[in-house]
Length: 269
Image (cartoon, rainbow, N blue to C red):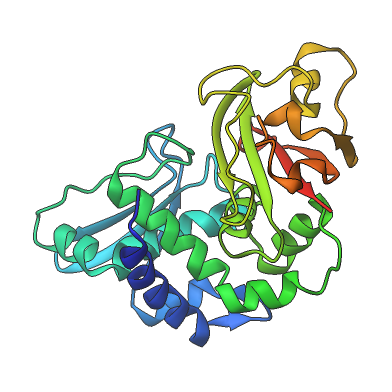
């Protein structure tokens, strides 16, 4: 976990960079790297890493695995932003420069990350999706749905997975998102204002069977992509004295081929 104080430090650095290098809503990452004199090398590094910041003979260089990162793709943009984070966060850059940290490649995953990787991921989200600009664009839609996430994804040129995570942090609507694979919950993200109810699932356990995502794994021909009405009891144990338990809840799923996850978005009217 990253403390709130540490998040403020990281977001200030990242959003300061984004203010000076952008085109529309998309942050110009290559311009940032060029201004810092950091060359980018793309090669097939097999399964070693997605990206890596390397220091040698007095200079930094950034290496991108083109086996998984297509040039100029949303996935590569997050990889570049992540490595820019390692360079821009003082403790990371100086650690690499003076040998206190060993060069290590980044991998795209939602869990099991060390603190340095978590900080670089958070930096990347702030750099690619500055909070005020992100909220301004999100507020253009009066009703929430997966299409709002996809619109933000296109506008900021960021993959859907990190866009969902960022929306849960600074978005304009309360949401709950569950990331699963093979009917197993890998991770979840929720807005601070979403009800703090106990879950009908456990991380690394199976999805609740009556949810839209749960039916996808249990049944054939159950890949539902539209907005579906669900009961709060499908996902949670709502508190009886919480009036929000009577509100209509919706679920919509996104099936991510590049990340291999099913994302369940859950929200209220």
